[in-house]
Image 1 (spheres, protein in one colour):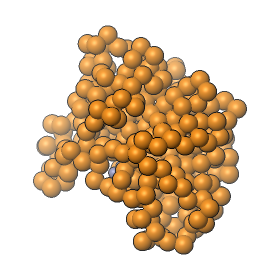
Image 2 (image 1 turned 45 degrees about the vertical axis):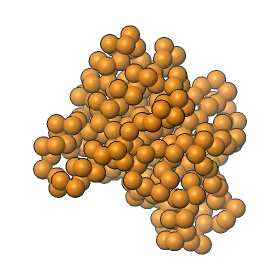
Image 3 (image 1 turned 90 degrees about the horizontal axis):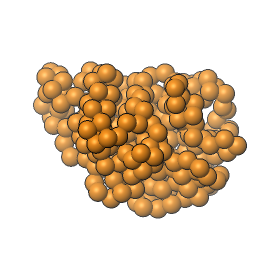
Image 4 (image 1 turned 135 degrees about the horizontal axis):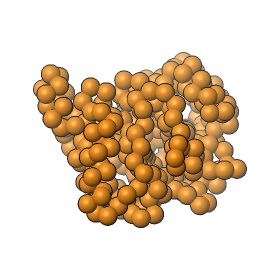
Length: 268
Ligand SMILES: [Zn+2]
Ligand SMILES: [Zn+2]
């Protein structure tokens, strides 16, 4: 599986592209401006029209910037979009009529969609948004799970993401750094709450149950720029997995900029 992060942070947005050889790519989230998104795709040799479909996780602006336009990204390039009913209700109230209904598709909790040779399995995740979704994508010979922006990892999410070849998984903050960040108390409580974001420790704990010897690479994502750093996140997750005898390659998706993982990754 080729996996590219186009950006991965609250500040610079979130978008990921995946594909298997000889199949068209899928886009997960589009939290970049239209120009940045098109440029980022260009950097990896893709045109927006190449995308077989896009999947939206939730309505927070760092995930949907290119949806919230007079002519949204999928409308401009004729790309089908899958998202939860909760997302579409939100979207309709703000940007109703901006997308051709034939491009709009609902995906619910524990629902599978067969598209372009992939099976995409949607699941609800705990986050303070309207029916926020994560996705597991199975190709012919490879699999990847996407779980960013979630406050904790329920057992049913663990069951769905266990033993995949690649995981794009949130490690948002270091607890000490978050507490001492000087941010307003309500924001700290929100980030650290059950519907907020995963800390490095919480991510590491969940990953001890998700990673198996089959897992090739864990791509830590959505790191807080102010309250985390790639070295700390990698160390916390790596050490925890090592105590369980698990040593997948651990990578970090940069806050901004295009970076390849999976079979497109450096050293993968
Ligand atoms: Zn986010
Ligand atoms: Zn969010």
